[in-house]
Each structure stands twice: as C-alpha cells, then as structure tokens.
Amino acid sequence: MNSQRKRVTVPAIRAMKGKSRIGMLTAYDYPSAKIADAAGADILLVGDSLGMVVLGYPDTLSVTVDDMLHHTRAAARGATTALLVGDMPYLSYHVSIEESVRNAGRFIQSGAHAVKIEGAKQSRIRTIEAILDAEIPVMGHIGLTPQSVNALGGFKLQGKNADDARRLIDEAVALERAGCFSVVLECVPTELAAMITEQIAIPTIGIGAGPSCDGQVLVFHDVLGIYDVHTPKFVRQYAHAGQEMQSALETYLADVREGRFPDEEKESFHMASDEELKRLYASREDQTSAGGVVVEMPKAQ
Ligand code: KIV
Image 1 (cartoon, rainbow, N blue to C red):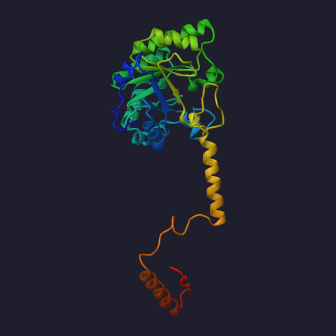
Image 2 (spheres, rainbow, N blue to C red; image 1 turned 135 degrees about the vertical axis):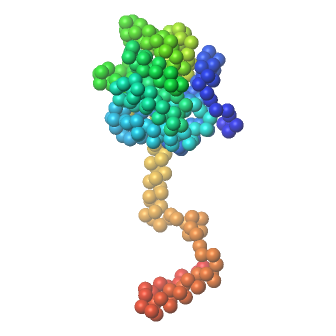
Image 3 (cartoon, helix red, strand yellow; image 1 turned 60 degrees about the horizontal axis):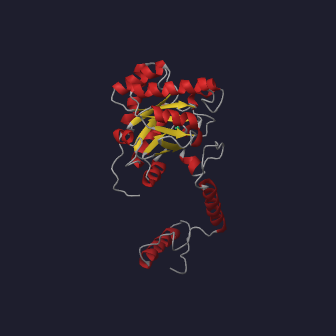
C-alpha cells in the first residue's frame, strides 16, 4: 500500500457512506496495527475482543480500562494512517456519566481518535451524548453486543423476529440522532442490516450482518487464522497463520536441539581480528597461571 496515505478522519469515514466501502479490522498491539495499517485499513479498532484472542479469557467481560489503554497505546504507535477507535470495556461506561466521559477521555489521551460503545438504550444514549459533548467521536454498536452475553443468553443472532428487528432499527436511528459517526451491526440478519443501512445517514459496519453494510469489520486473529478456540460462521479466514507460526517454531526448536542454529557465520559474531583473539587467550593463560580456569584457544579462526 501507498505509505503516503493521509490520516483517515471521522468526517472522512462519514463521507464514505454510499461512495466507497469501509474496511475495518481489529488491532491490539504495535505489530498488528502496523501490518493492518500498511494493508490499507480505513479503521483499526482496539477491540475488547482482545480479552479472548490475546488474553485467553472465555469472553470480553474481564477486560479492564487499564488493559485496553495499554493495548491502545501500543496500537497507536503502529497505526499511522487508519482512524484508531478504542473499544470501551465492560463497566467503563455503565456506572455514571461522569466516569464514562473520564474513561472515554483516557482512550483519547492514549492515542485513540474515537471510542466505541455497545448498546443504545435510553441511559446509554445519554452517556453517548455526554461523551460527544466532550468532543470525543463515538462509534455505536448494536445487535449481538458481547458485553451483554449473560443478558442475551449467549453469542446469538439478534433481530430474527420482526419485533426484535424493529427495536434494532429504532436503536440505530437513536444512535444516529445522538451524533454517532458510524454504527457496528453485529450478527443480525442480512435483510435487517440492509434496512438499517438504507434508513440512517451514518455508515453501518457489519460483522455477521451481510454484504449490504457500508463497511465490514473482522477480528485480526480470525482473518489470519491465528485464533482457533471458536470461529463464528461469519468469519472468512484469509490465511492459516497460526499453523504456519507453529510449524516455523517447531523447525526453530529442532534446529536448536540438533545444533543447526545458529550458523557460525551467518548468525554469529566474531572478534575484531585474530590479533584480538590471541590477546584474549594470552590474558586467559596469565589468569590460569595465577590459579584461574583453563580455556583452550580454538584451532581455526
Ligand atoms: O471487540 C471487538 O473486536 C468488536 C468488533 C468485532 C466489532 O467489538
């Protein structure tokens, strides 16, 4: 990709609606952000999915603000072009509006350009409005909201029946009216995502929401085939990097055990000159005659 690309901004993302599809990925650290940025991602999300794919938890609920900020700072150093969105974790915007605004501000101070918040009930809309009032752009997220996994009874498709679908349309409209610059639609029927996309003027970004959305997002580790604990139906793996990484590591370990790594020339260093080596051994001999350890000089140098 062209390294001269300009930084993607919130207004630029809004302006992409109906013009060009938005490509978004998660990224959790310097290398993943650098690679996804160089690949041309428009938006990088430091998702709380890091709880599962990086930290090994069964869900996202154990992730803290401090965990997220640590990863946001690292990703910010790798993302030089993409818009960087920080995902506010469970309990960081649930207790009070004041605490929510302060937490959102910490993401911005850690290098994010915007935050993402799950849900759109009335109290959540008030929180979102307060965060926006602090000049922090907000990306909404409705449908399957993983932080509500216990209330939803599992990671399930949302909006399957007309009433539920109607509620999600109303939520998307409420997020748009509140001032969100985009909204993630996770795990909802294609028909519903198409309807929402048509009805609101801000971009929809789908994950398991079919092809009609204004953009798509997938988890970095899913796209590359690094995380194999659970692969949802909506994931397309573009590589099997996990397998490739394991087999590379197996080869390295076999090379270490068989003495094939490191190579004495290609991967090793030598003394500045034979003269220096001789001086070194002479000094060891002096030490030996004074009662030290005997070290023999190698024959060929
Ligand atoms: O945490 C995450 O990765 C997300 C995206 C998948 C939308 O919320």
